[in-house]
Length: 85
Image 1 (spheres, rainbow, N blue to C red):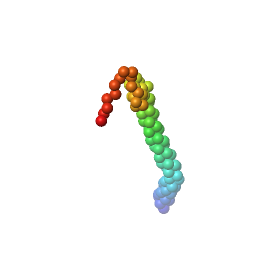
Image 2 (image 1 turned 90 degrees about the horizontal axis):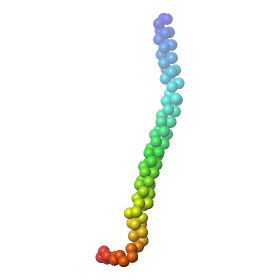
Image 3 (image 1 turned 180 degrees about the vertical axis):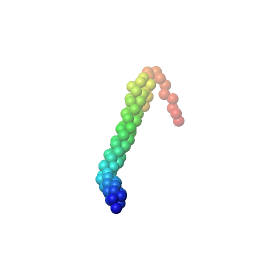
Image 4 (image 1 turned 120 degrees about the vertical axis):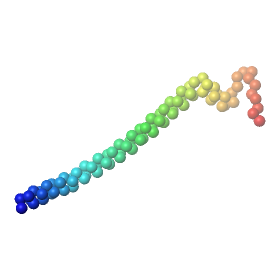
């Protein structure tokens, strides 16, 4: 009889522990999902920053400035424009 009570108490304790640990695990999973989302947003922002830095570097280079100016139909003095038609 004594052994039956011990088994009952152990099973009840395990059941109580499992029941009480459900909420912390749920909170952990929610926080982990939020953290994963934030990490993804941060990585996307970093990729965008790198793209913009490369674009800025190109735009500030002599070749990039010339491309912008020539895009506005600028030619050097004495330069002949060839018709692409």
